[in-house]
Length: 391
Image 1 (cartoon, rainbow, N blue to C red):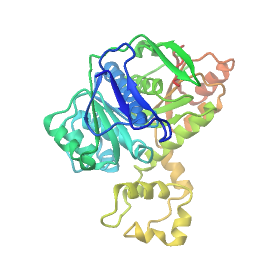
Image 2: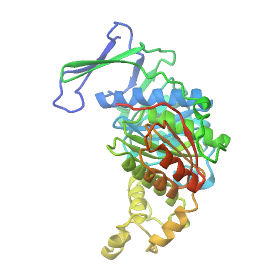
Image 3: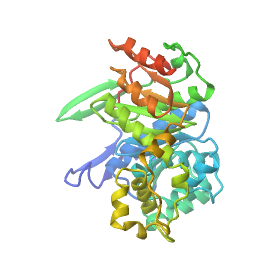
Image 4: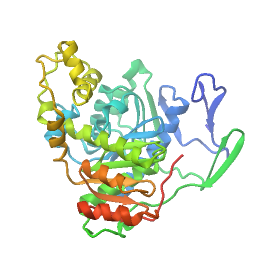
């Protein structure tokens, strides 16, 4: 099959819609269940490229959680601490490396991952399928599925869950095209290989990159390669913890990603881990409640008495001072940027969220100011010389 008819395009009024191979060759994807939509396929094909590159760069199974053609989370299959198992709601299941990768990818920003499209670098196993079964998700793409995994996933959404199988040996043509307003655009595919060689030009006084920092910086750069620009990505211990995508101002990317990284860290605080939820609360409602609890609007919820519908016991207020003190304990965070930082204010904001390692292209007329700000905080920064815009 070299083409697939779709219900509609980005919106219901955009018809007709299809995907096809212009050269007449076979589509590299096979639909095993459900009916993928236009945006589903954009998420699936971008996400699979991301996890395929993560696997190549790190040698570890990888997963990503995509929403609206940008990742909400991306990770490799490193073991989870007991705290991460708790906040990712996986403390009662056995995790394989691939399942750990998806738990990390989904857990980074659970609000944004609601209704995601999942991409997996390896054959989906039973453990990963059981995790996916619990979550609200539109679909999954992988190079294969075990019999048990496929049976579990086919039962999701009353048999309508979208399951795609992609040919892992597929090689796209080197030139890609698209149309905007009837005008055809053409460019060479971004085949840049992201590896440790890109991290060799350390321009700050602190030139020490730990082995984990190198892995995390590669994860950040590969994630950015498939994130709508402008974009910034915070990574810690093998997973993205905050992604700022599609902003016109770079400092807004950094603030957005930094705020998400702070929320991820706050979810691991004793105040959040000690919350007692009412029996039978849905996972999405629990996520929303945690987000409200660590936000500035929680005092309003307390005063309205709405807490009784969510918590068994009225939680103490998580004060601004307590949150600031907890966030200050987050260390060893890596940050990647898809283009240069034009001002040192990005570094100031990154430092507040525990960033100690940075990779960015360099090339700003204010590079000296950016380097000076890194030196003030002892941050090690790499100039890659490579921009990673994605549109």
